[in-house]
Structures are given as structure tokens and as C-alpha cells.
Image 1 (cartoon, rainbow, N blue to C red):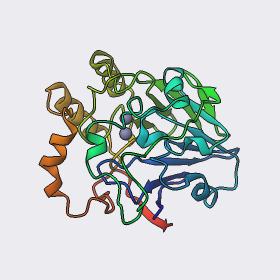
Image 2 (spheres, rainbow, N blue to C red; image 1 turned 30 degrees about the vertical axis):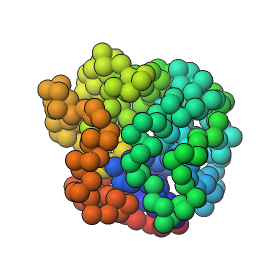
Image 3 (cartoon, protein in one colour; image 1 turned 180 degrees about the horizontal axis):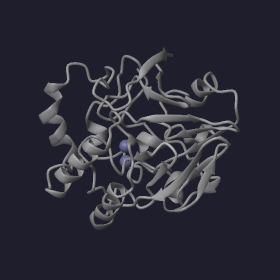
Length: 273
Ligand SMILES: [Zn+2]
Ligand SMILES: [Zn+2]
């Protein structure tokens, strides 16, 4: 029960919830700076994230949420400093299930390991309200003292989706704007035209490393492949339940570690707590 913690690159750790199915599991990035540490996204909130982060960090903490969906915003409420885009703020302050997209198919498919979380129930699961304490928008910079992250507004998947761009290491923390899987562009507040513009922008950024909201990290060649598939209409997800029915048999263990062997940034498990 809890989180797996991985070393990714110097100053960047990855946390993943062990009790969430691998296809649904949010990547929680811990970027360690000179002056403070930044948590990018916060998982489903099944277990305290802040407790685990504090074991890895002795600096002040700020949390950034790339967007309001339940798989990213579940533990945001635990942090004193909660940053995100203005267009997601009302959802985060009042996270009704439909608005955090915990509804329809997501409530019917098995995304949580009941052995680890026997008290979890799809009928009672809620995201705890987490009003933002500050807004981030296009062009803002987060200065950790030894690393600057620039905010990109990347709408499409949701209106206030943001990415964090580290120009020095050419790394993009892309949230759900782009990950190595089927993209979700037909949620209630998605916008396909905006999504296309966002992907064009991501393509021209010059990023060498994509640390995404889900699945293993990747580089520019994989990015081009994913965008080509999406533009050809082959890399978006329509019905969640249909996808799950088609793919469930492929997954021997829904809650196992993901395979990062082919990732551009091999990761090393440092602890499982
Ligand atoms: Zn999302
Ligand atoms: Zn997500």
C-alpha cells in the first residue's frame, strides 16, 4: 500500500501509487530545488502523499496540479501551497465527480486494487476540495533557485491544462496534454481544436525529454510518432469501457510496475512505502 519512489535524473524523482491500475496511474513528479521542492500532480488521494514526500525532502514544498482530473488532484488538499491554472480553480474548489471526470466508465472499471485499499468504493470515492492558493498561467516562471520552470498553457484535454518547461534540460512535464498512450480529447470540457494547437506547440518546442502525466517518459522521436498517429485519428480514446474490455486480457497484473526499460530516462526504484 502506498507509493513507489524512483530516481529519474538528478533532482527529479517519480512517485507512483501502487494501488492504482497501471493504465490509470498518474506520474507524480518531485523536482528538488535549492530553495524548495516542487510536487507536480498528486495522484488519486488513496494514501497520504505529503507524508511520503516529506520523507524524501527537507525543503519547503509547493504543489502544482497540471489539471483538475481525479487521478492528478487527489492529494492536492494536503499541501499548503497549491498552484494551478485559473480555468481549473472552480473544479478544484468544488470537485464534484462529474467535473473531475470520475464518472461513467471510470467508476465501473477496476482501477483500484481492493487488496491494498479495502475501503475504496466507486460509489463513495471523492476528491477532497483543494482551492488553489495561487494561479499559474502562460509565461509564468517557477524559480527553484537552481532550476527555472516556465509555465505553458496547454488546453485541449481540459481548459486549464498546463505544462512545465525546463529550457535548461529541454524537459517538458506535459501532464495529460501528451503522454505515451491514447489521448483523451472528448471529455466534457475537452476541446479538439485547442488540443490540436497544443500538440503543434509541443512539437515545435524542441523538447528532448517528456515527463508525462502517465506512462514512461519518452523523447522527440516517440513524440513525433504519437502526434502522427493522433493526427491520423488513431491515437485518441473514445469509450473508456470499450477500451478496458478490449485490453483487460492483455494485462496480467493491472497493478504491477510499468515497464520503463525502453524509456529515454531509465528509472531506478529507490523505495516502496
Ligand atoms: Zn486528465
Ligand atoms: Zn490523467
